[in-house]
Image 1 (spheres, rainbow, N blue to C red):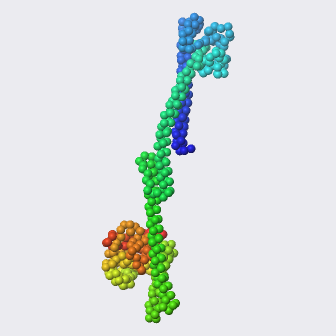
Image 2 (image 1 turned 90 degrees about the horizontal axis):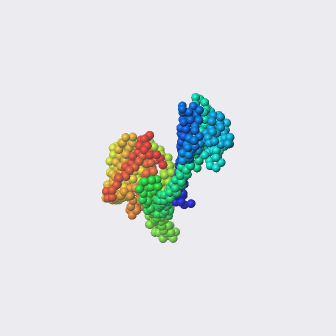
Image 3 (image 1 turned 135 degrees about the vertical axis):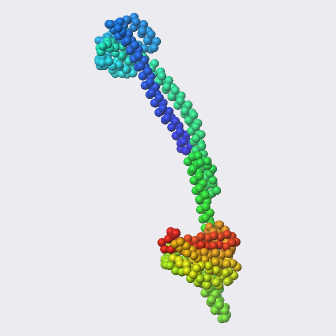
Length: 483
């Protein structure tokens, strides 16, 4: 069954159940009320007639037969019949040849002054009916004088007249039920349509997302739980869209890396293969052989470097390297680094500047610290020509901080977002043989810094260079949790 019909049926069941419960309670109350009013009215008549019988000017406590006859005529207008019994349990009015008497059990209770109420004399086993035709609701009221039973009066009203009020309540209930079903059905249809429509929109949107359409957006007013669900759905779709875009970007970078790696490996392999063929067919002059062998060595080292960078990254990323951390003077390492990099800087007409005190203590693995700084300086050299690269260092609270600032091409916000990811190249067209050619240098830097418990930040603008800030903490003050 569709949700639409389930909701309508649910609403109608609630309405019908509520009406039945309320109606049953109302009819039960009306029934009690009707009989209670009838008992009160009959008892009132019985007490009033009893006062006449017990009047001081009536020492024998007898009522005139003619008076009673006239009273019966009046009472019949109120649909009330009466019978009077003496203190010996014999019917004295109306006169009859039959020996009418009340059951001894009831008569004993009456002697004790108890008033008897009978809801239906055809159904009450305590009495035999005073009429074989109609059932009566009746009361039996004792008359007592000076603690003794003087007489008993039975007053009855036909049950069908008492229950007329109950019948009217039942008719009203049935009318209310039918009216409520019609009105409730209409309201249920409107509410069910409203709710089902919103759920259907959500279902259709889910199908579109499952088919790869992440442009879906549900409108909502934040009025109910379904609107909350729609809002959360939009948040989920946005997250999926970002994740999908990220996957596409990663795939694009992977494909670019594979193309770059294939290109980088193809060139040295082609060179080596060509030289080997030359040696095989003795096509290389003797004077050119040393240079050819040196070229093969260079190309072989280049291939080894590409492979080693990938292997090194995987080891670092999977925590398969052991860091041997100790305290040492970072200034000495940086000074040696600048000496080694001067030739590369000169090739691009760059100036390397070291700006730090003679003593900057750092707690790190010395070899890996050197690797971090080499990669960052090589990255700066790759994207800087005719500029300056400044390396600075200083002590901070519980650690040391290092900055590598260049005046190169800089980066935009999108490039800075992905700069530390594997295979990413901020400017693929500037990839050179050597540093940065594999797109792994900064990924290795980030992984090593995290394993040291430090952090790295980058600040850059297009055309204004970039500044990488590395913070390494003293023993016991790690910032990051190891990956």
